[in-house]
Image (cartoon, rainbow over all chains, first blue to last red; front, side, top):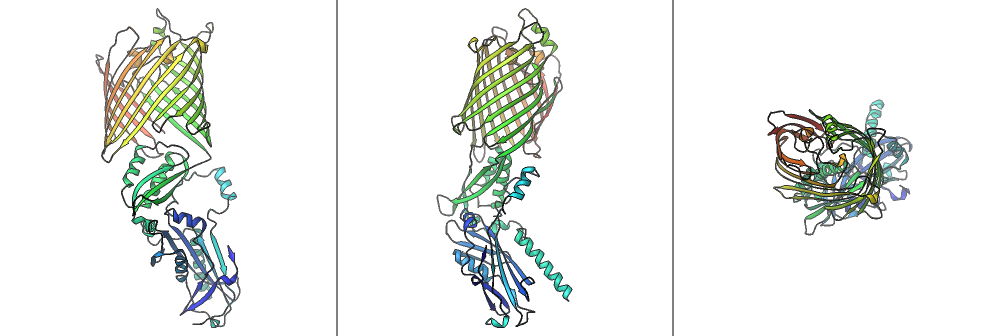
Length: 171
Length: 428
């Protein structure tokens, strides 16, 4: 999913670049159905910084967050695989917390360099159900399915920022 | 420096691609799924298996389900259970859903069985060697498309009947005929027959019996699922037998058939029990164009109780034929499952019109000991009960899911001399 660059705002917090995307809602559709079925859903976030041209990645960071929905309390838990976790969140609270925990270092960037940021979010299959199907082995049918079907998990969002310079951002 | 920056960026790209492809390393390790999922703190109230059809699950799977109820929600164990059910019912996928239970902090687990639209299975339902009767082997291939399946089998069986029959069978089955409660099957069999010398000698006696060199059967059958435990099948069997000599004419045994089957599994934390019972009747008459006119009744029942690694099995079988039945309908004892250790051709090379047998077996882990008793006779004839004992190994190798193997040494009692029979077999 590609949205207009007005949907991604870049902010500088100390020596890090962070983003906010108030109009993007990734707790939606099939991932939300799986969450309401009691499963957890991993979301992979990738934040890429381009410098000079939009074709040259300068720095990249990847974070995985595992979200689950408490059936009785009716709120969300999110676990960042590198340690931090939050419970009792609303859907928008999860979305905001995930974005707050994805950051790029500004080290090595000149204040006048022309920069762009791209945010990619991808929902993965629930780990609880990943092993519940039998691998039928290689067959003509499986090859046709493999090349013919769309991606199993189409929940994928991409947002690009407008061009900016570090010196333009308020510290 | 520029080269080092390129390397670092490349490594970051690889990690990023791996993460976006879904195979990012899980730094938590172990049971990370359960730690991440907030619902793992709830207790499992029940586990239901839902799907298009009723599924009969094996004891190990039922035990696995039983072991998870009442415990904290364990997603790794549920995945393992879902895999086992996928294998057992040949499903494409078994997905897990969790919903609220009837009380706070309790949840219900629903395993949705998603069947494959089509599949192809090959199996060897019977493969055994008997030191007296030699080899018996049956192979079967089944292609399933939705509710329809077509199967083809090749076999040579010297174990079940008084004849060794070899040839092929084919069947078409429709699992749902207007309703999920009604199944339809059309079976075709074509076998060549060989006879034991003792049977040939006995059949040419004062009342000669019709021995055939081949037989062909067409059997349409409807099955009604009356309840979860009870089903009733009815149909027609049209069997044509070609005589040993070219001068004699072909004979037919056309009968109306009916079978009532009951199966019940009762589980508790300390004792698992299974009861199976069936009654079948085959009635051949001139109205169906049959040369043989007879009615054959057969009753079978078994009870199994298991506790920990101990298992007790009780079996009973009785049957009676009125009228004149063809050889393949006559009762025989002394094979790999009844009156083990006895040679059926020593007991009665022509079989009988009456049969009664029982068995008692005790199994501890793979070790099995058994006692069989039974008698086969003709109406008005002398009833002589025979007995046998034996021991052996029986178990599941667990390689392909249900490959039971059997090694048994059985001793006929009251025979006057000790002549053991050895049986080795396996199901694939």
